[in-house]
Image (tube, rainbow, N blue to C red; front, top):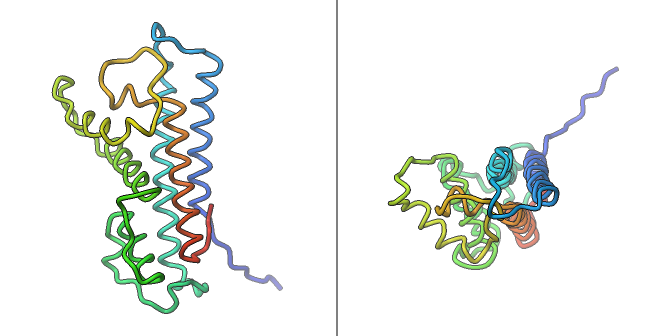
Length: 200
């Protein structure tokens, strides 16, 4: 007789592992090439940076989806039997986390400080990568906006690059590490405060 077991994939952990892998490649490139401002980075440097940022946010998205659908799978959850309105699933990532926070803790989720604020910046960065709108370099409104949000969080590209913040000067192993750490810290802190399953 074959017994059926229930199993689930943990995409939050898998996506975060992918982000960490890409970040480690960036670190390895910097360590082996010892970059200077006279040397351009190899193409994979930018590719791995994009991968780190995008997979870090994919981990955030997979995590909240898992939290919101736990009761549908018959799992114990701090949300209890509270039905999750279908429109919640279509809200921005942090609004979905806010729904859980408000439901479990009875208070609004403050997005303007601490790890939630940094996570909002990370999501904005991912959005600009995945929904990039071409602009003239001398106007560069997206680059200026991201620079004002990120300049205190990251170390700039150690390789030779253009004079535009995004998508050139902000690319580094340090900024990739910031992306991974921000996503991890947010999910861990959220789980610890709300009691939802910790996936990472």
